[in-house]
Length: 148
Image (cartoon, rainbow, N blue to C red; front, top):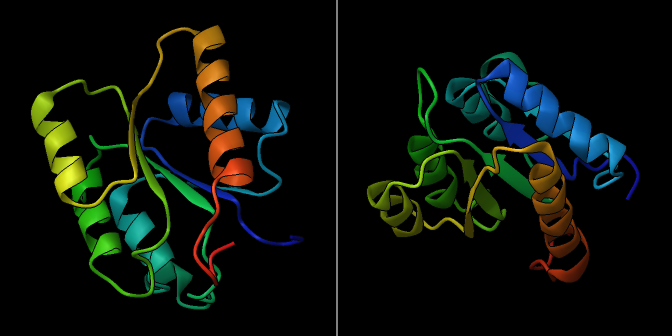
């Protein structure tokens, strides 16, 4: 679908964000990517407010890769906002984080996350994980009407 944002990456660490975006681009996993640098920017983007007030709120991504540990507004707060709003609750959200903490995993699922994935620490494993996520969420998964 031309022009549709397929993956939104919400990541405050610029090195990690750059690596994720580079892998997704080089592996041709998504045709359209957006990087948001923190939870505050993510909320503005998804709800078309602030610096994104001109964005069409109905133009939703196919999937969101969301970090947890971010300044201003953390990933759990973003997830909770997304899943509690009828306009955004059906967007698949993957918590893509370095946290293996049971409390983070439990809170993610309690807030309606679709998947929880711990970021691999080496490049080859990162490529494999992102390729598998892309294949599943962009190719195999059947989204609800109006999302895909």
